[in-house]
Length: 412
Image (cartoon, rainbow, N blue to C red; front, top):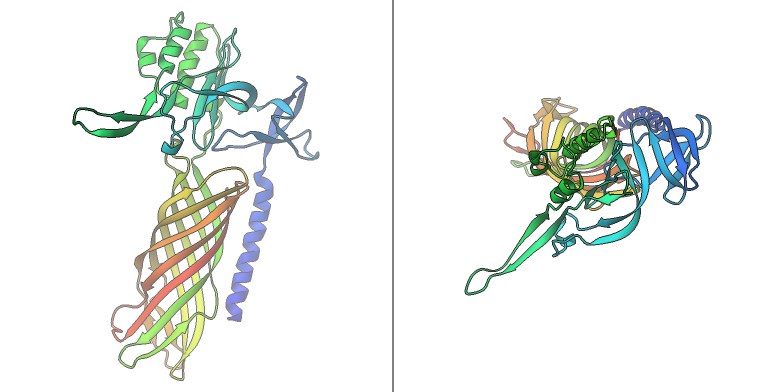
């Protein structure tokens, strides 16, 4: 028990040392500028971010050694680096999202007025801007004579009532693709734009950037394309370390003798790969997590000391669902399957007789919950369902393993 504690303490110290330094180095800054509400421009260092949603606040500092300042719509008009640019606008936006519960029954766009930061995807004679939150994504553009124009696009709820004995109350989700007509009319004098350019134009970043690049070519302008200077990160890597509380039963059926191992804690180190499958489902991810777990314990069985020395390599795989997403706390639920590979041929040892017991690699379900805090730290609790631990020649021995796991991780 003392040796196990020392081993875990050493691993924990190494983990905290590495990731405390990593946490400090992860906040990287690059040269850029801010423009305040009075139009004054200041050269500064802007924190590099790669958010899922369009940020509405930013961190910057005036020099390497100065304090970090926080900026939002109440303090700045624009902030930019060589790889990204965000501009504040007073605009009109339709908030009908992808979620059925958030859909309007009207096909026509329903605008509300708001003040938001927009991400600049393309900077030229005609600029292209982008906004995304947990339920919608919208494009905007401006022209030399017009400030900010929303691209006409939305999802809406289709509800039909069929008469004369036909099917009643058929529902579905429709798309208003009015942006194709809107853009065709707005840039009708642009000879570079063909009928197929409009017909095949998808409501997506890459097609829109390519389209507006052609529009700028009509003005003899070669635009700056920010969207190609940085990628939207869809894969997150999360080193993790944790403790688990197991419950291991060992029973000999022939003699009806049994014991339970649950006197100490196990520990594990893993690496989680979290992948966002679709921009339309930002709250769903697929996760793969290889993990090394170690548990040692000792108990008495019929005046014989039985030692449990359990080392396993696990690979957990399954989906994760975020209840909501913001910058502070993002709670989630997850589930899946856990592939378990035993690293030792024996886990149970009779200290007196030197008797070994074979363990059993297996697949079992796993589920849990947790939260991402400040877009970096992961806190998680999960349950591993009971599974058989022994197999082979020892037919009289039955052992089951289950555990509750507590994990902390840092998102790279």
